[in-house]
Image 1 (cartoon, rainbow, N blue to C red):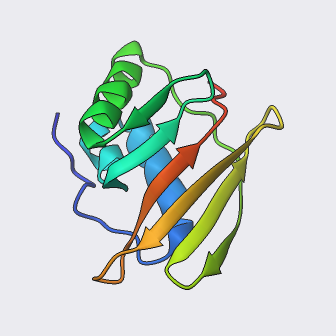
Image 2 (cartoon, one colour):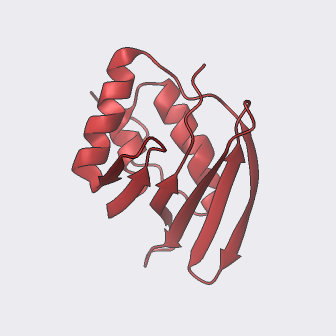
Length: 121
C-alpha cells in the first residue's frame, strides 16, 4: 500500500494524533507506522505489547484489512517537558489514551510509547 502521508511530519506533538487518525481512516498503514520511533512500544490494552515498527506495521495492517476504524475522540492538550511530551485523547466511551512522544534531532516529534484503550466505530 502506498503511504501518501508518510512524508509529512509532526513539528508539534499535538499533530501526532490527528495524523494517526487521518492515516488510519485512509488505510495508510505505512503513514501510521511513520509516526513512531523505530523501537517504539504499543500497549494494546489487552495484555499485548508490540515493540518495533515491523510488529506495529503488522498490527496496523491487520486492522486496516479488517476495515475497522479507530473512534475519533477529544484530544487533550499535550504536556511538554523538554524533548518529551505526554499526549492523550478521551475516546467516546470515556476511555483515555496516553502516549509519550520524543522530539527528534530534526525538531520533529515521534511517539515512543503508546498505551490505548481501543474503541471502534
